[in-house]
Length: 284
Image (cartoon, one colour):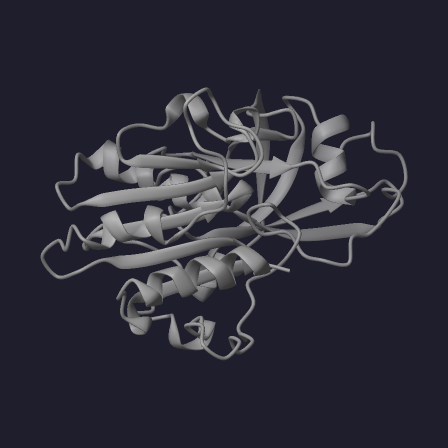
């Protein structure tokens, strides 16, 4: 944290900070109501865990902010140069640490938005959370040239190595780790199928809108372009994707708020997606 951030930030958010950056991944799932498909418990939605080097992940290293890009009125991407970054898999996250001049320390988990191919750099896309001490610092104080401490990559449960068909469902800033997968798919020119279904309140709040391609279907819940229906993600959006049936079947990745994770995973189960082929990352 640079000298512009004199003293500690004004508030500490009670949530954590993955993706939208207001919550760590939850490992428990509530039961569905009678007559509705149950959302798969997150503990069952972690097939094929990918080993993460604890030695590498435990070491703090200095990152330098090199660029800030506005994505939406509420979200920006922060590009960091990390010369000793050991690499990551799409879907992984890191821990970030800020230290104020008085010694106060704030740490948060953030999903990595960039592809592994972006060697020596990582990108984080952060919503500005009301009263969020870390997101607030990034959005109002941070400037290119500032130094930040990071460590990782962390967790393999939500990672996609690019070796199986991927069906991605996200809402709001839940798109962040999914976009790392999309970018990896493009950078490698992978032939394995990848589809993404993403929900936003309106076109102006769709993160990475200018970067999304034919693999992505956007659902708008409050406002939409002329001729595009407004409404919540539904079975009508999910069914055509499940109907594609690629060889080996889909590995589904769901990322968003608790409510969205419940809703989207139930849609997948109802459409026939095996429970043990759904990976969930949610923010509380």
